[in-house]
Length: 243
Ligand SMILES: C[S@@+](CC[C@H](N)C(=O)[O-])C[C@H]1O[C@@H](n2cnc3c(N)ncnc32)[C@H](O)[C@@H]1O
Image: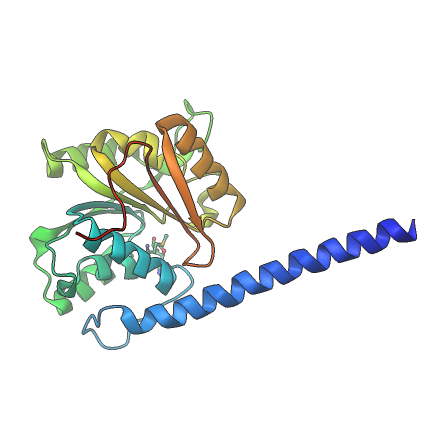
């Protein structure tokens, strides 16, 4: 009995140490990333726990710059959006952002005005949360009719090459980010990347594995780099070798 208890204590201590190490590495990566992120030129900007972490944003910008991503669909806009549209990336990205909060959309538009970003580079879709009872998984998401008709109108025959899923907010409902890919896959190019934030939450882990199985994707989990997962088609040609 004593032996079993000792083994259990040792296992718990080892797990706690691993968590602590990941947490420390993750904080260090955030500190390093803050220095590398572009200066948005908007003065002090609140960076709250709603936002992606700095090292997650840095990974996102790596993806955009290295793979020359042009059209990004983003669920849940904010600090990440401002960075994606920053002139200092040196590429003319375009963002189609989805959010349920009209006031928040106005706030982000205000920042973009101050950054001097031309309004033809972004479209924000304000879509209320809606239950989708015909779905088995992730029954709540943004209103799909609103989202799909507005994206179709913006993209026309064009396709997006990056999908960032950082919304709906965690408290929206169980597995509330699941429907992002089943709904938006029709708007993605043959080769694309998906960033799924908050990957250390059980819901997001489940979603990543469901998407991978359904859409034949590779999943890379970066717990110590912003807590994001990056998913790409198994057939992707994207690599980090810059040529
Ligand atoms: C799900 S988060 C997505 C954040 C975004 N991807 C980023 O990195 O900043 C967006 C939602 O969080 C809320 N939100 C974000 N930042 C906020 C803030 N500083 N204060 C209040 N609400 C905020 C907004 O209402 C919005 O609907």
